[in-house]
Length: 332
Image 1 (cartoon, rainbow, N blue to C red):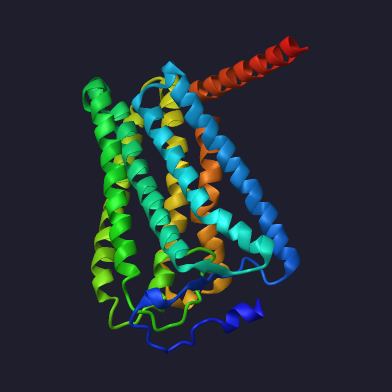
Image 2: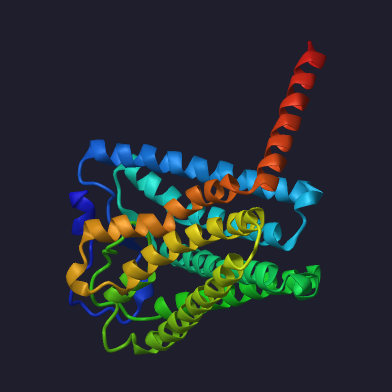
């Protein structure tokens, strides 16, 4: 690892063309070989859990016509973004831990930044749409079929994916067109926007600040909308006379609220914490909490209180098991 760090560009050297850098140096997950291998197995377990859980949700929603409704349609889209997030950051981190390296190519870093921004902002947008779905279902149930018909759901999902794609593209192109004069060592285990901006020359990155302000304003608007919606939702739920009705309403809302709380709290604290609190270990822990952990635990959170989804997954797995047994015995 020492030979790799020697190849880092000295701080303070002005790079008028950032594309002249052939690679970046990522933050290692650990300093010792034993801990690197431990992180490798930990990330492998998290990745498999995310792939299995989100894959089961996608398959169940796609195959079971009973789940062809707005809530599960948006859940399917959320599972796709979770898979995208986990596949963007974790494989490279596992590769570096396995081979005891910290390098990532220039184009690989740009691609990683683009896809991470694309999937992470899409997840925020989908969580906001899912909050709106629960608001309409509980506060305006008579208008649910009108406000959230199949065309409206498709339009909202398409708008979220397209706008977040454009947002990620603008940030990536703008960021990687900036000259770098602070070296090429990224203080994160993946190429994250704030860490790349720290490497740029301070007099040049002002044009990126405008895009960042717009993006933060939109994210903050989504957060305010979700808070306002849940205030209205809980007020409506508490007015439901039957205990069974309240339980059903809470079963719809609590998984989404848990996912939003975990994702938003860690993300906001990571990006908006004071510089005095910043340290490599804290930054690494927070980044794992908002970029790696949610894709793995979201399927578990959503399936715990969703009986329809659990039944669909159980039915699908039983069918696959029965088909496998039938094929084995037929071959015999």
